Amino acid sequence: MNGALIVSGSDKGIELITQLLNSDAKTQIVSVKSSTEARRLINAADYDLVVINTPLSDEFGDDLAVTITEISASGVILIVKNEMADDISAKVENFGVLTVSKPIIRQVFIQAQKLALASKNRILGLKSENISLHQKIEEIRLVTRAKCVLIQYLGMTENQAHRYIEKQAMDMRTTRQEIAQNILKTYED
Image (cartoon, rainbow, N blue to C red):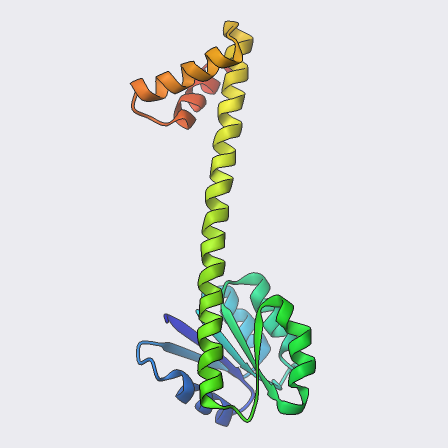
């Protein structure tokens, strides 16, 4: 784990959560006492895990937890009083926030931590796949535009234009995207 952010209104809460997280000595832990400070830090840096010990000085903490899941891939654990755990969990679980009730049972917290980190890794994998798919779509659009240009200006059929771009890419040992860009520069500029 690279880094954890603890958000707790009390020093005692920060100390307890730090002890729970310190089983991994490589973990860099940052702690703040308000949601305002937490929002500032989340916007400035990425954290593997964010643990919010409710209530905070400037808000309860559930809105902060949801906001963090929307703007980052961080795993989020929300610690709440036992009597509120079910209601708060129902409110935040669809956003991927894990709820742990007080008093904290060490083993339950460690399991929640592992689940939060696993969900963070899954989200990062999906984001990476999404970026790759967007790049492929952009390449397809570019190649299609280049084929249309070859059809319009050189009178090729779609198959001929496709084969031309493929052959140029192989012969020049470059990508279809680069060939398409060169075609578009030549005919559209």
